[in-house]
Image 1 (tube, rainbow, N blue to C red):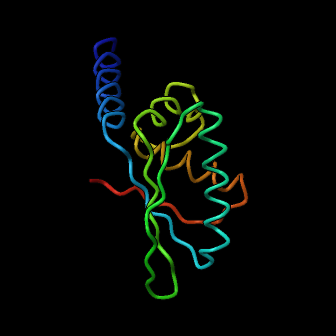
Image 2 (image 1 turned 180 degrees about the vertical axis):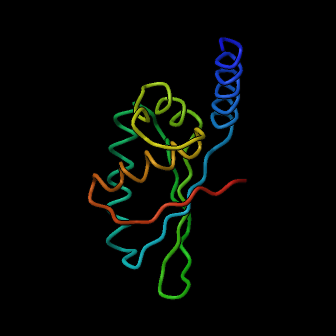
Length: 123
């Protein structure tokens, strides 16, 4: 049993290391881009401030399709590290760190008034 827990911890540490090394990318989608963009920027600035990180995120250029506007949100490795190590993701469900981070961000944005849909984009 101890060996199983040790293997699971090693696997989790490898996932964390891989995520921290890259810059996680999320695709946000909405039908109300101009309103949501302001909410997302404010929320992410708040998160950046809470994490005490500069340049912790980047919002990419939007594109439209079928009445929806899609735009990507990229987090810095430093921001992800602070979020993960601070325990902010503690109640975020998910089997992988990547899924937990996506769920955490979705709940965080929602708590700030945003209604965007969020999807993790794997590089």
